[in-house]
Image (cartoon, rainbow, N blue to C red; front, top):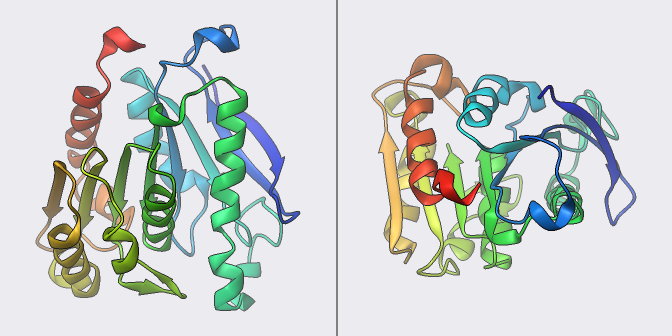
Amino acid sequence: MDPIRIKFTTNDGVEIVGHYCAQFDRKKEDKKDIPSVLFLHMMPATKESWKDFAKKLHHAGFETFAIDMRGHGESGGGPDGYKTFTDIQHQASIYDIGGAMQFLEDRGVNLSNIILVGASIGANLALQFTAEYPEIKTAILLSPGLNYRGVETEKYAKLIKPDQNIFLVAGGANDSYSTETAFKLHKIIKSKNKEIKTFQNAGHGTTIFSEEPSFMDELALWLAKLFPVKNR
């Protein structure tokens, strides 16, 4: 199915725009076991930065939802409002995730079947939300940092539960800060199913997919093992 343009308003009154791609139409009560992937882009970027990975996951049986976070793209304050955001305004992007989660829940998706995938500050926000809502069981973090615009990760890494699945990714020598962060968080996180993947020189955030396109297949396979086809 083609993506549907979705609009919702966050709890603090910001309109967020996203692209949602369902597997097929079905009644809400029948959708609970379908895994849905929520994408959180880096700065500066938009929901379109996830297009190739989202398409691959959709073909693998996942539903996908990529949003423009506040100050970016089609969402409130966009497309360039983020340039003047204070740290507090960037941190408020956590409400964008909450609104997207509510949309998915209203569609009948169980929280345990929602996968957060974030890049850069989106990775930090994904880790924060996963730590604060342990019902969320799976997150993929591309190029996290210890502190992006006041969104810190070390304190949230300590809150991750053993039954939560975390995959940390970093680009290597040309993104040393994120690479060092990924290794530090990997040591802190107490998950029974945690992975880390670093590259030689693959850049930052979703740039990793451009430099290492086959890695999208590796991540899709990792997710498919966690969410077998029989559950869809």
